[in-house]
Length: 95
Image 1 (cartoon, helix red, strand yellow):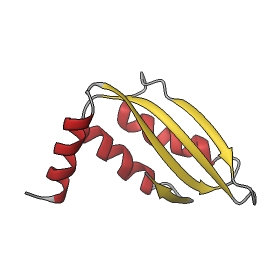
Image 2: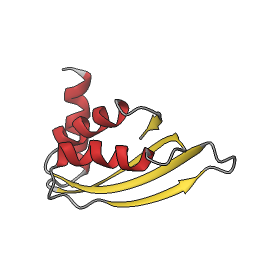
Image 3: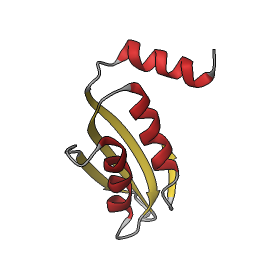
Image 4: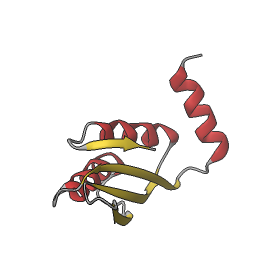
C-alpha cells in the first residue's frame, strides 16, 4: 500500500465526505498571498465552494497564516488541494 493510499484511508476514517475540511497555510506577507491561496483551493474544490478564511500576520510582519475551511467532496480532493497550495509562490508551510 502506498503512502497516498494510507493517507486516503486515514482521511476517510477520520472525516465525513462531502463536508468541510480545515487547512492551514503559512507564507509570505504580500498583498495578494491570501487571494492566490484561495484561488488554488477553489480551482480544485469548484467555484461553488464558499471557503471561510481567517488571516493572521506574524509578529515580525514577514508572514501570513491562513486558516481556511472549505467544503470538499472527497479525501482525494483534500490531497489535491494540499498539492495546489504547495505550488503557490510564497507558501512556506501547509498543514
